[in-house]
Image (cartoon, rainbow, N blue to C red; front, side, top):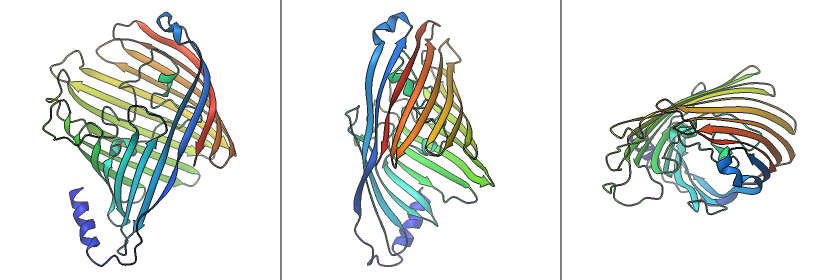
Length: 347
């Protein structure tokens, strides 16, 4: 990333940027509004039965300018439509060039997350733990294939190479594993010096589309955080498409090692999915399963999803969800299903 910054800087001073215009910001984003019913068979969570309305949405402020030397400089600020832990989801600046690739600087996901190919869904979704809001007692912590872990949108520096013959690589350096933290990196309580590397491939061979990805993340020094362990993640993704049909498989692994044995162990997550889309109609079927090797913790989730495109940026979507899960002692803590429908809007 340092080499790419130096190269971009060298190009930037090669000539005056006199014709480029000041960055102008446009507004976009998405909104999801869901209404559904859930039935939880696990007795401890019976109070979670019934109807519910859930929402998700962000307003995106984006802007860019292209300098006379061809370098594109841009910004991206994402405002949450609800207060859910953090009012601003992501905010970062970037510089990109067809010759040198792209650099992100700010609060954004790491390379392994951004380059991962997960399981497509025409409903609520399942590969990022979307069942949690509907199936009581179901915990997807560590049970994802995208390798996000505790990092999420921590401030970081990320570099992506240009895509050559379908291949692209990326790397992130994460000084502190905590979002919106401008305090000194010597402060205790925060993992430091994390990094992430990833690569993916996407290409069409006639009517067959291939997408594949692999990534690794080290979540940094754990010495500053009490009662925790070393944490690393690996993830792989594969998608194949032919016409309107698609199949996908993903695998994610979180490895915890160290003296704190209560948190140590390996959690493996696997996902499988099939989908079909023709015109405005789409259907999908997905499975995600996760388990820990040093306990009886196990989770399984299924989703049947469907969509109908009502117009540009306006989708009518629905899901039938089922999930079950056991805790570390092997006791069932989740067992339920939900039927959910709603609107997914892009603007």
